View 1 (cartoon, rainbow, N blue to C red):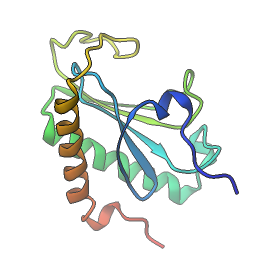
View 2: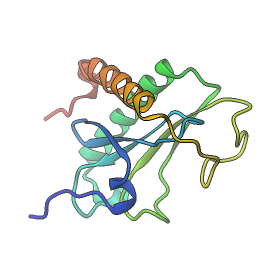
View 3: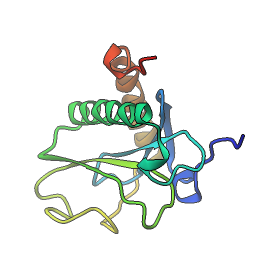
Length: 145
């Protein structure tokens, strides 16, 4: 059996934590609070590569990610998207958007970027990790067997 590996574009992102199904990664762009959920299952390019229970778990984890991100980074609109044209591995973007951000109301794909200072980035990642850990205690996010 092949081990789970991130494709290069996702491997370059910052690690946040692992959930039951997904690895959580951080996009280093201070214009947008932005994380990715990547199912930790080998050869997973599309949702069709997941079992039905894994699909349900992915939806639970998206709901968790949205709740955490919107509570930490109040915004006008949260964006959730799965677009695999450029990165051939199933991943879900969860992005907090505010009116007046550099790309509002357009998309963030190929958007304005500004990197965080390293200490600031680590502080934000730690805050997201802690909030996810706390929210994971809620049994609705667990896989039922």
